Length: 154
Image (cartoon, rainbow, N blue to C red; front, side, top):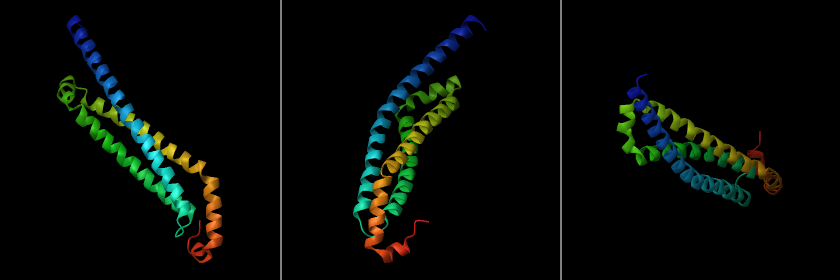
């Protein structure tokens, strides 16, 4: 590689590293906000499921976790679009450097890792509530045997 090519290569790496650092900072800030919000919502929904009387608290929790996973997946897509909008001024430069696809792959992987963690964090909230939900469900089944027969756990 000629000295000019090496200098261009080094400059490209420097620019890419600067982009990644800024994008990671932005993602961390936004993700932390989203994470606490989503985990708070799933906990509130589990609490609400124990208070309502129409459905089995365990079945209610299963449905809420399923909805939670859908919302997390949607949030991942929204954050990706938000990042692309926030850092749109780099699109032309990335295209000129030939790293547009690499940056998109990196962004997708970075967000996927974070939101997979958020999915598991929601599952941990569900597991942390398992004993409470089981007790609430047992009490609900005793109080509403007709509905309980219509809502088996299997």
